[in-house]
Every structure is written in structure tokens, then in C-alpha cells.
Image (cartoon, rainbow, N blue to C red; front, top):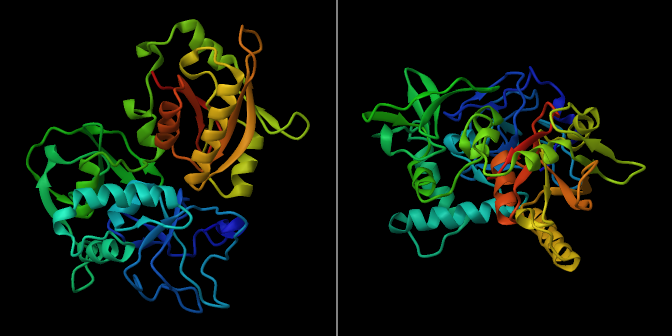
Length: 371
């Protein structure tokens, strides 16, 4: 649910930033996902419990026209928690919300049910059944974090592990040290011995069959999961340079603005602040694979892309990409707010695009090549 412009209130005072163990901290770093475990605070906005109920969810930081006061007291409502990324939220024991992240919820429940079919208490996969199993994997009877052992070399992307009291993300055959502001420089994943795993076992099984959590840009920007480097791309150099030179217009000519690759955009940063998001992607469905396509086909694909974005619970703003010079006409596109880099690339692949443009909270558009 959206917390509106009040999200930035009391950054240092609220104990609502979640680490991979699921513990709550008062730090200034912002998160990319909102979540809750029920009402955890009192009238003085102090944390008095770690959870209330089994339904631990992750939500979008902005959802429609809903606005919330963080740690509201009149009346008391659920306590807003924040996570660095989806991998952190899963490690803490949270799952996607079935309302504001409905598409992601369905993806997760589908993968989770397949991966854990033999361990389910019934043939029907409901949110309550998932929450029941997840809760037994989050905390023990004394309220302590449940960790379990597994071989390091058998853990899939997205798994969080603990080494010498510090959390690490397993990603792209490397270990990435976790912090509230992002991940540190990666280290080689060389050990095949056992390690303490923080991510619940049933979630790791879902990761193992292909469900992949969104991760912070400090990981994505340095791995092949985030696209193909220019020197390894199969695209011709002139085409990559044409993408880099394109004007990526957002909104109308009178009221909109233009994005340029690798140039900070103050209008984009302002939009992030007003929409309470920390990322966006510029994606098109026109002319898949760089091949000129009939206008009617392009328009139909454009509408399918819009429906896909809405099904993900994200906001899409019309745009148009136009090269200052070149043989092709402008291509209708969307600026998708609040999307992770991994999901932006998945959209690009799904609609046959050679590249997408993505920007993190600094508001700097980057060209991400898909091939």
C-alpha cells in the first residue's frame, strides 16, 4: 500500500528497516519494498512486538491513490516495514501481497506450490497454508530466527546465508555482502561445505525451480542477470550507439520530459519522490528484435504490454522513443514506475526487445542490453 509523501517522516526514529534475519532496526537508508506483520507499535510509535499474526507480506511503496502515515496512532494500524529488496524480504520470511502485488503473488504461489507439493497439508495452495508453513520456518517456539544448513554450492540465486555473523546473498555463483544501503563487492563462491541458510527452506525450493527474487541494483549492475555488456553484445555497434543517442520522452510534449542515457534527470527524481518509488524502466513493445513491424501489430503489442504492466500492479506512463537521426519512426513506449531491473529485463525479453532503459533512485537512465 502506498505511504505517500509521509514515507520520509522520521527516518531515524522509526524502528522499521528489516534485515535478512527479520530483525527491525532504526536506520536512515530507504528501502525498495514496503511490508507488514500486523500492528507492532504502540501510541508512542515504539516497537513492542516483532509480529502479530502469520501473514507477513511485502507490498509496493505506492498503490493507486492510497496514502498512509507511517506508524499511525489515531487509529493504530499496521506497522510499515521496509526492505532493501525482495531477496531480503524473502529471507526475513515475507511473501508478496495478494492485493497490491497480485501478479508477483501468483508467480510466487505457483512456484512455491510446485516446489513444496509433498510438504503441503492440503491439495489447495492458499495464502493461509503458505503462511502456516512459512511461519514454522521463520521463527522457533522461542521467537528466534530459524536457520538451517545446506551445501553452499547447491544454493540457488536469491538465497541469503550467514557467515561469521554477517548476511550474504548467493547470486551468479558469487557471494554478495548485505548492508541496508546495498551489497558490497562480491566474493567468489568456492566452498562446497555446509553453511547456515537464512531464507526459509520452502522459499529456497521455489528459487531452485526458477522463481527468482528481485535484487538491489548493486548486484544487478555487475552481473549478467542485469543484461549483456556492450563488448559481449550480439547487437551491432551502430545499433547500440543509436539506442544510446535516442530521446526517451515521458508524457506529452508540453508537460512531459526527455530522458537521455547516463544523464541524471531531475524530473525523473521528482517523479520518484512524488510517486514514492525508487526505480523505473522505459520499455517498448514496438518492432520486436529491431525488425520493422506493421503499425497494427505494434499497437496490439503496445496494449498487451500495458495490460502486462497493470497485471504486475505497476503504474505505466505513456512515452515515445525517437532517435535524433535514423531510418525508423518514433516508437511508443511506457515508463514503468517501481519496477525492478530483473523484472524490466523479463518484460524486454517477453516482448522481443533488444534493450530496455532502467533507472535507480539516483534518477540516471542506463541502457541495459538484452542480447
